[in-house]
Image (cartoon, rainbow, N blue to C red; front, side, top):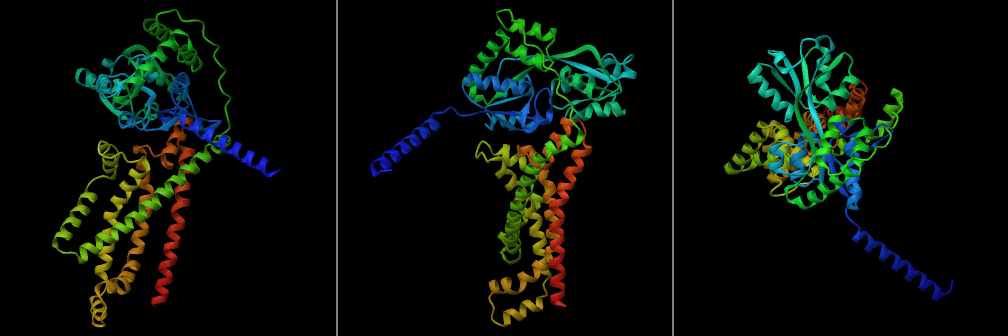
Length: 499
């Protein structure tokens, strides 16, 4: 190649790179939509064929909205109970996960037009179907539902009126399982959830009476009203051209009530819908486990990384706090003691909520950073007490001897007191790390998908905790046992050296 041709080729390559960079800059951003895969089908669930992908009618509606906006959908996992808070703080553009249309939600967020109407129905054991028809028939009986829903409000009202006993759950799987086991007398939830659960749990029956009616909506931050208005237009168009009906029929949630609801919402008659696909073929237990194993391993990496970083932060802060309480003046000791007592006296879950949601108006910490700070700051208080006790356990005679030899207080701490205190603190410090490893499961409330959360999603999708729970326990043991063994080796070596 001649020199001129080389220069020409280099210039052409640079031009192409510049054009590609410009195109990337002008490309529309992805439409980040939040949902809870633990809720399961037909809303949002991990695809059994590829757990890294989501499926469900809310997944398809999100894809429809993104496509008609000229954007690409990007799923953001958020615990169902945290969807409203995450929408308000801007963790995603739009939330879709069987979210109910309520006055409080409309007051706090930008809410779209309803896209599906559901019925709240009672599910009872088949043997009790002849006597429990309505809430009034369940006086003095235990009725389960999800907290913070229309169904929960109905149960609270029925508690005052009919004397039933409401029982709150964080998910829609365990209420039906408890009903089948006799721990509940009925469950009140959406007919979509009830129909799915009756297929999954044998011995249950759905009563035909409608207790209440509600509608599913999508939610956005209050300041995203303009985007909400565009999405409203997309949803209305999808009702008119039959796209929504096709999605609902595909997931077998289309019925006469939904047809009547859409007739109220749209202006034109809905065209014929597509044919419902055949149900997916069942997979063996081994193939299901193998398909989810990569997701569990990835979540384990998040857990161990978060735990190690949080422990490193806790150790560093704990040493500083302990040193300050031993060597500081009265004011320093007072402040540090107050920090330790307040931190140890309040739940780490509350501290995570405060860091992530409570401070969002001042600083919007990324989820991982909030989780790291929450765990690190919490465990620093416990670590400081371990180190303070270890420092004070070093014999005073050794400290006086070191000072007599002319060592400064810093040298005494670094060369005499510190090493001996570290040996004393190693065993309890190892125990704290194992405890922190398990407490990392709490960070799912701030949208971090760690091992326990991923296991919960797995368990919900296959309607069983047996295999996922065993895998989760095995992975936790695989992470914690080597550390404990290393600590025992170090203890044994130091004991032998000092003997």
